[in-house]
Image: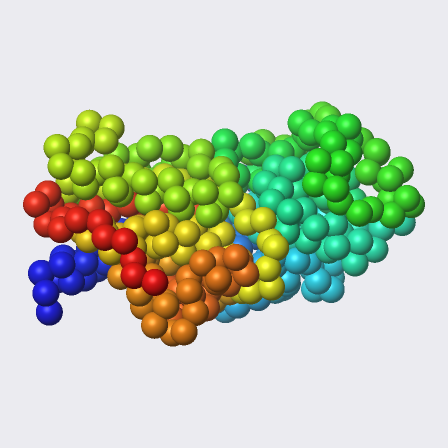
Length: 438
């Protein structure tokens, strides 16, 4: 094995450890228990946990509250439950598109919530994925309408705030409406943020938070992305959501900022100089991939010190990119980012680029994302198809599968956006950038 491959293998091993350890450090079990331990609860407490991290968050609450917990419902994604929890009903449902179980689980939560009195307290545990999982369309709207409009927005590159601005209007529980359902009971919400900037009214579409968005903004999103919508739905879209909520207190228990800082700490322990560039990465995935590749090239130029640091180093970004779907392939935003980056760093030695979703599921796939290096493109092409063809078809999953670059973690139990990083080895190992031979 040549020296370059030895270095690459070490970088890939370190990249995998950065991913594993940083995600492990932001699992919500401890953070939820810490938040709950600092607050006094009067009996009875009814628990609702909603989102991809709902089971983990609920298990922490069961442990912390003990006999004060009177029951409740956990609504999470298929495959994300890890078994029964004392006094809690567990329902699994669809993500990224809602399904019949989403509606069934939501109606069960509504049934429990409407029976609450002023002496009751609700503990609401929210995490990403809640917008799909927690759904009960308002009168005049079919679940199929919600799915169709959401899919149009996703495929055309709308970001999560834009998507949630629209679907709040079609839901009986989003945009603060669930808080009204729970009244007169009070609500204490512990929130795991998967939204850039930690907007409470957008995380899981803000079911218990006064809505900052407006109907005019929702209509503007529909127009911006040329979404086809039935005329009968326009009056629903123009109905405003609650702008004042008086029965809820909310606390952020985890976010992408913590994930980035954790990745920096892990990398530093491994001997790399860390720098967190941003926790607001928000653009098309393939453009983000090209940008991260440009950072790798800059870091490995002789005598170059991008952002004042030199190899061995790690340059870290957190956030959530989008994919504009024009092809018929399989993949997610992190895999598309990784494939785009791989094309740009073909035959670049001494650097790897990683991109993963902290929840362990990137789009409708079983992969969390990918780790690519200078040899990824050659490994993809050896399978008989050029990587650019895969990228044009939004088929990043099968491309990275060919190159053995997929990162598969399984459901992690958390959801705090995506982690993207460039890992560069010690100076002096780079042997130059060569043009890939066609």
